[in-house]
Amino acid sequence: MKNIVLIGMPGAGKSTVGVLLAKSTLRSFVDTDLVIQQKQGKSLCEIIGEEGTDRFLEIENEAIASCSFDCCVVATGGSAVFGKEAMETLKKDGTVVYLKLPVDEIKKRISDIRTRGVAVKPGVTLEEIFKERKPLYEKYADFTVDCTGLNAEQCVGKIIELLSVES
Image (tube, rainbow, N blue to C red; front, side):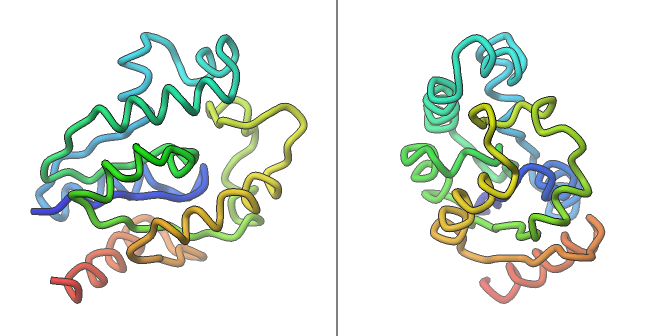
């Protein structure tokens, strides 16, 4: 059974949807942010604060690329799409699903982007992050699910529907 890999902006619901999707599809659940934290022994915020954004992206890329996923739902960090090797690893045995959400909806879900361990340089706005990452999400996605106005269960239903068409 292929992995299902969730990509998208911070706040799009990758972890929440991922847990429900894993239960619904009888897969294990992996959150790559937690994998990074376990490997580094630090929170994402600490890694970014101590190492800087560029080094964090390298650490994220290396951590994901070194993993082997089997029959999993993988929720990635929003910046995973910057890692070429990471995305190659994820796409090799997985179907990549982009959880698409407009930036105004993301703003409603995230009160402070700095506390979420988001790889962003000082002074960069959420709109700028969205504009930079959106083309990468679209590039790597096998499927896109527009999650606007949907709750987590509805997103899971849409993903399962799309994947059943693929089979």
